[in-house]
Length: 176
Image 1 (spheres, rainbow, N blue to C red):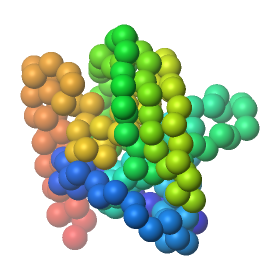
Image 2: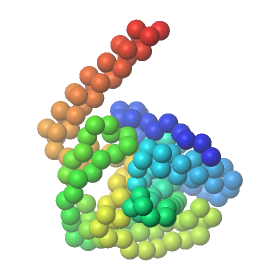
Image 3: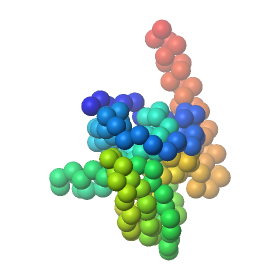
Image 4: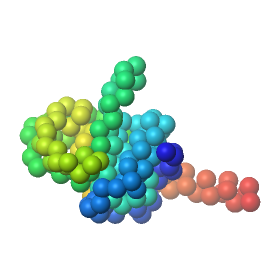
């Protein structure tokens, strides 16, 4: 297992559509293990493979409180087949630094996916669990929660992020 670098907005891989997983082998098991370790280290509650530069339809999630034992959920090729109701709540993202914003999501979803061995999964999710799944599935389609906030907030964030990146570049140039 290894902790991988989490790509930050505006990295182009974050906007790619992830490819379906067709081979369930040791390479996939290693990817899942690395993703889990990376997510826990961050710390986060979900991570999509393209957030670490791998454009494949793999998601790991763990929404258990920190004081409880970990319950890793692995979703391969996840699809949201139906959604119902709506809820507005605050979201953040490991790939979108320094921003949290209210996002409207389905309150309840129906999901079809596969586990890490390729076995089919079909289940319902509600509330926070449904929100995290929707957020991570968005990543697999090249969407960030930025896409669901107001254009003004998005524009302000993009300007702020551009300044951050310029400052980081100046610092790197000075150190070289």
